[in-house]
Image 1: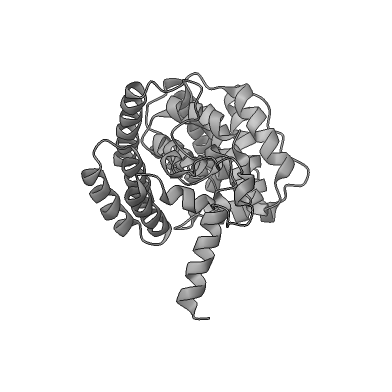
Image 2: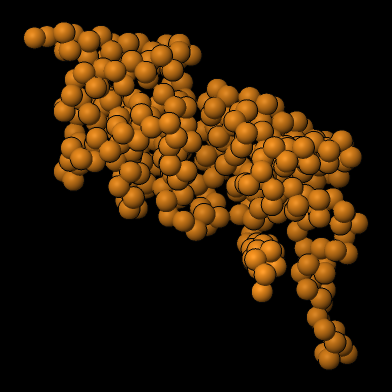
Length: 329
């Protein structure tokens, strides 16, 4: 079998398996989910049963669902093309939220979190309008799949909407089955913990709960050390004494420092503002090098800004202490 044909079959298999997931965990929009199977008719036992995709094709929005699926496939490997396709769909279907969701996800994949968040908000408005017109049941599932919901949370984080992000992660941690890779589950918990710490005031107990879940399942050395750094940040902000885990040693700390300073972070690491990774590395490396800790923390402070006065005061105080320690002969 040729490579192109094999790839197409794999895509079909992935999409078919998606039909078995609850809506909130699936990547397919609710609009394109198959309608319930018709009641079994004993008189047609010999006839071929209707497949889920047959029921999808029988819906009046077949053209839109097909175009959405094609755009979804492009999203990971060619975000620019996916963005162009999604924007065309948004023009062709101005009353539908689904094209705006794909537009938002493509914008995020291209690195434009601010415009991505705006597109997500536009999609939410369209969803609210369509639900009002249809008198939708308030108990119906949310309008975003798990993976789209995570993109929404990341867009909120990177565009400075801390409370929106934290609230979204509360929803996401109930949809962990959508991520079969345990590293991605750990990433989600770590992102949720970071989001809780960005609240003003910080939700320390909530962050600690997410961290405990991440640390209990951590297998990747990088993510395990990342979690230790985030725990160190939580303790430092609460004024608690430092207490590194017994397994944490110098090679793992310096590995985190190397990762933090690299041009590109691993794809399975939490997606957070870059300065936050510098801060975690600084906290862990201080006992090995005050100079390295000071340099990394300075990068953290520069990226932090002054949005949260309490956090800014804490960050500047630690920077001054590190500077004094570095100046001591």
